[in-house]
Length: 231
Ligand code: SF4
Ligand code: SF4
Image (cartoon, rainbow, N blue to C red; front, side, top):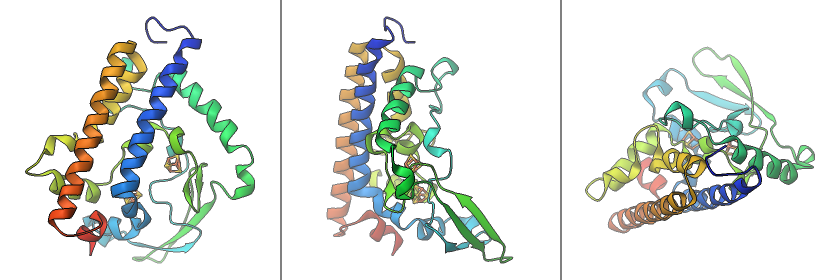
């Protein structure tokens, strides 16, 4: 448990966590979600995709939403004592997820899919994350750290171009998009004043990053980063 917190008083950290996720979700919806809706085309840009391309033959293409991914609470790049979301936030999220997802089984959450590998025609069956539906993620602000932080290499490479010449530092290091893990470690383990300061920093980073994307789209006379980089 973080210093100076009682078990009950961790609820404010859960509230701050959800506020951070809300902001990142909005950012993805505004600028990045069409990448994930066209995941196969994006992944085909990877050099290794030349030998490892697949066709979907059954179910919904999983994108990044493989079984178990929604329950990974690791904070990459943080020191070992801060390398996971604090257990009290995890417990708070899991409790709210349980309430939210009651009855989801009937809605077809977390099914399976089958891919056919081009080079040898083999069929590969996989399982979606338990929170995945054919309309996307069902968790909203209850997503885990990996789900709001991961961007694949083609997406990262495009965003580096978007921010080049403005503020390349904004994108963050390879393991920590927008320094989200660093913010989550502070939300997990530091005192309230420092957490509030970090939330103000995070809001500013998200606003600056959004402005970079908007400016780039205006300069290129395009309405979508996905369309600009993937057509
Ligand atoms: S982040 Fe990249 S790999 Fe993951 S779903 Fe989106 S486009 Fe696909
Ligand atoms: S929690 Fe949501 S975003 Fe994360 S892996 Fe599951 S379905 Fe995908």
